[in-house]
Length: 419
Image 1 (cartoon, helix red, strand yellow):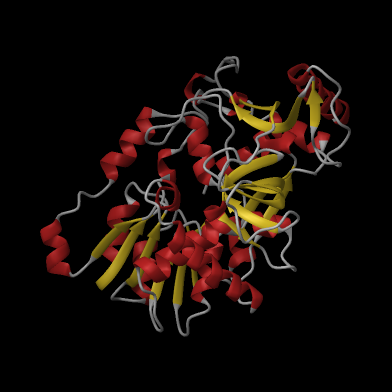
Image 2 (image 1 turned 180 degrees about the vertical axis):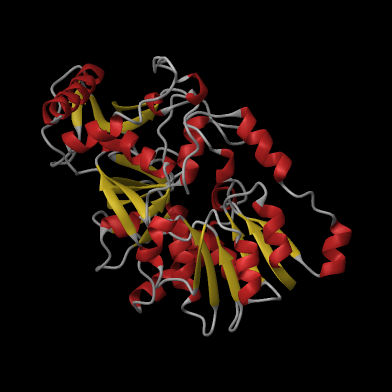
């Protein structure tokens, strides 16, 4: 097995060498830059086309330079999110053209400033939102999406911070108006957003947090929520047994039949917020059946019923808010508040694990399997672990290139993943 793992790592290096046409740099150290002729290049994870994990590869691309109003960042760490999985499948509205470099958040060091950029200097430690292209050694992004990070915050923590904590904060405080004595139900309580929600709720007195998660996660996260339920149990009845009236806020990243369940649990003047649809992802590649089933299970909202029951239903997409709806100023204010809470040691990003760029398939498989507690991070300077990569790849290379095996016809789309 170890020998196979080494061979796997060597194949990865040979692939990089073939892409670049030159010898790759050893390890992940140095400035990460390479020259091909007169062009300076960098390593980046490339999505060649929508589909399975086999569509991801590590390649070399021309290094970007900052345009007017942009910062050039030497990336140290990148965040992996469930939305990245959906992007890979093409399971989003108006997906961009491939090939593309995935990723929406990163942390690193400012390497160059575009014209008209103020408030930052070369050498500043920052975290940033990026409209794709984050999974690379260097990124350029407009200054309005960049934030300085505290001196005692690591790069891995900083890469785990923006998407999870901003999403949790906006939903709780901007949309649902969380106040003392309220109650919150959050699904996927062991994930990055779930853990951020639990921590932020703890900053408000007497807030009760109900969470659902796979049983194997309960021991690790039991202290972060008030009441924890198995994701496969009848959580509606469990919540009502504890709180007959239900809850004030429901945060739903699952969609499907959980929409109706969430609405049924709302107290009068309660708020249900949909911020994801992971139930639509049941296999490695996009499935029309899974999409249609989840859509069919969503309870059709009747405005008259909402009026009669005094309930609020809302949706939240941080990326749309930032990149399509121009609310960067609002998000900057939220980040400042969150950094204040971090400095007061009231919140702290939960990092599940660190992965090398070469291990992106294995890292994404862990998200598929819902095996993470907290955030998965791509560490740009990390050296891949051959044995681990080989063990993971054996079960993660399913896709269009996988051969059919006798007796496997019923499992061609893969078994549903466990939350």
